[in-house]
Every structure is written in structure tokens, then in C-alpha cells.
Amino acid sequence: MLKVAIQMDPIEAVNIEADTTFLQAITAQERGHRLWVYDVATLALEDGRLFCRARPAALRQKVGDHVTFGEWVKLDLAEDIDVILMRQDPPFDMAYVTATYLLETIHPQTLVVNDPTEVRNAPEKLFATRFKGVQPPTLISSDPVALADFHQRHGDVVLKPLHGAAGSGVVRLKADDPNLDALVEIHAGVSRDQLVIQKFIPAVEAGDKRIILIDGEPVGAINRVPLKGHVRSNLRVGGRAEAVELTARDREICAALAPELKRRGLIFVGIDVIGDYLTEINVTSPTGAVQLKQFTGVNAATLMWDVVEAKVG
Image 1 (cartoon, one colour):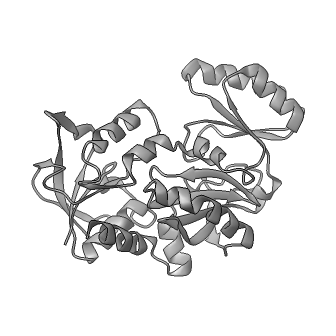
Image 2 (image 1 turned 45 degrees about the vertical axis):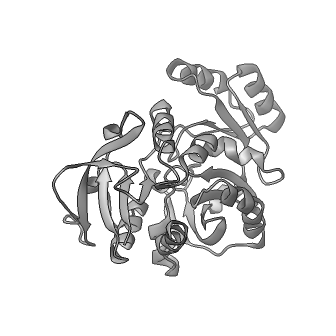
């Protein structure tokens, strides 16, 4: 039996029919592990010891009545807990980065999934650029001149915030679209982050594939199909999930990533593939495991706990 603390957004508010964190948590409970849940805002570092305020949680697969809490307790995360799942949703901002610094003080004495140092060092759209030959033409910059030059050279492009999530802020600009400068100005008015501009991949109309990898190994995929006429396929903005098989190109991309994912301790990862191209490597709070289980019977949470138990044991 492991003592597991889950750093997440309020579990009482999740959609248990779609939420990957809930699947990870209830799978742990079914394997005999004890669960606590806590909000990242309750983390407290004092004299080199990391604490949080947490509640024990008993889960059940019942919509509208899926959790019962025990009394609040103060946990010493190095002494009282064996495993932490870092599963709060992005944005990947300085608060998120600070949480990785705090969790770094106890890992690997307490195993944090994913490794907090590597979560910090692998921002999802930037990390993908480390792997040659798997991305579409891509530029990351806040320089309007560089962004305009890329648009002129590549024509039909997609523009998105570097640290955006769940499809937020993603827009398509065709070759003759005059709005790039205005969009860059709007973004600069609310953020100092860079932008990502990529050559548009027409294959997105057939879907954006989410492939889940456990300790570097692909265990399955779902396809997320955008609404007709839309470029964003994320499930949170109306994309439709459907079953899909891994192609030879998908496996080639996964093989290119696998050694680095294993080396970095990135145990639970979701990558996004459109056509023949990798677009993102999601390491913060990857989703898609519930849909994968529904379509294929593969429980990525079970496979994750197999790896975690082996590492802790």
C-alpha cells in the first residue's frame, strides 16, 4: 500500500466521465493505495521541510457523488507520503514553476509524477523542438518582424501562445490574412511570453491524435476531430474523440522521444500528432486516458501505477 497525495484542482468539481486525474486516483484506490488531495496553494516550505494541508479522499464511480472527504490534516510530504501526482491544470506560469521548485525539495525521496525538475525544464511546445525531423516548420518568438517573415515564407500558418493550454488562443492565419500584427500587439498587451507560429497542417481536418506514453512507451491513442470549419480539436473546445490506431509514423515519433522521456523521469506523457508531425509534448497534466480506456480498453492509469509501484518498491 502506498500513501498517495494528489496535487490538483478541486476533485469535487471534475467530470469523472472524462477526467484523467480521477481515473488515476480511483485506479490507485482500487489497488489498495491511500489517497489525499490538496490544492497547490496550500504548499508551505519551512526550514527545508515541505508541508501541505490535505484531505483524505474516498472515491467512487458515481456521477454527482464521487468523493467523500475526511478531516483536514497537515502532511509532511517527505515523511508522510510515498507518491505525489502533480496534476493541477496549466497555465504554465510562474506559480506553476514555483510549485516545481517546491516539489523538487522532496523528490525522489517522495516520488513525484512527473519529475518536477523535468516538468519545469520541458515546457510543452518548446520541448518538442528538441527532436529533429518530427515537427512542421515552427518559429518561437515575440519579435513581430520574425513572425511576419515566417508568415510570408510559409503562407497558411497557426499562431498560438507559447504557454497556452487546451487550445486557448490558437488561431489560423491564411497567406493573405492581414491580422498578424494586430494579434501580436494584443498578445503583447497581456503577456510577455513568446508566440509559436507553425505551418498549417491540412491533415488537422481529419483530427489531432493524442498518444499516451507511459515511461516512454506508447500505450495507445485517441483522435480528436475539430468541429467543421474549426482549427482547434481540443476536447475542451468542442473537439470530438474517436478511436484511432497508431501508424508507423506515430511509432517512429514515439521511438525518437522515448529515451529522453525515460531519462527525464517523465512517466505519464501525452503527445499531439497531426498527420505526420509532432506538435506538442504534454508533461504537466496530460489528458485523454478516459477516452483511451473507453475506445480500446487500455487503462493508462493501471500501466502508470505498474511503473510507479516498481520505482517506489
